[in-house]
Image 1: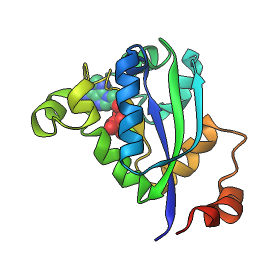
Image 2: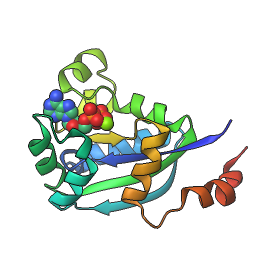
Image 3: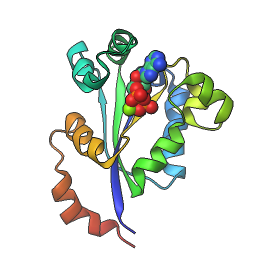
Image 4: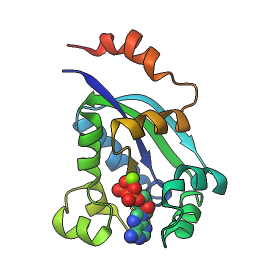
Length: 155
Ligand code: DAT
Ligand code: MG
């Protein structure tokens, strides 16, 4: 089994509540993820606009951009087998109504406030993880990690 990396972000709504961050962090560890890097950050509006450029035509874009720069966030590079899929499953559905009703045990199902203030972000594919990890961690070299550090984690 090969370790995979994903980008996980705890958004401002969840960071604002210390018990929610604690619970998400516990959840990360219970689910056998390794935390490879972690950082606190506070985006300017331009960072949100760049990161969510693919949604710039959607009705919620302004709301999303303002929310994501409204307070501190925490970003993680997480590793485990199938990390991208596992973290997305732990987050649950994007929309809060669906999350609460179909997946009440997921992070969004438990703590999501609205469709925009939905606690967490996770890369949705290998390609997006490859773009999003350097966006948050410009000093982290995925290829070098895979070559030099990934073998250290293999059973
Ligand atoms: P995800 O974060 O599950 O990958 P996405 O990429 O479709 O979802 O959208 C990015 C973010 O935009 C999402 O986390 C919250 C916001 N968003 C998405 N759909 C929305 C909607 N219908 N109304 C309000 N905000 C929305
Ligand atoms: Mg997405």
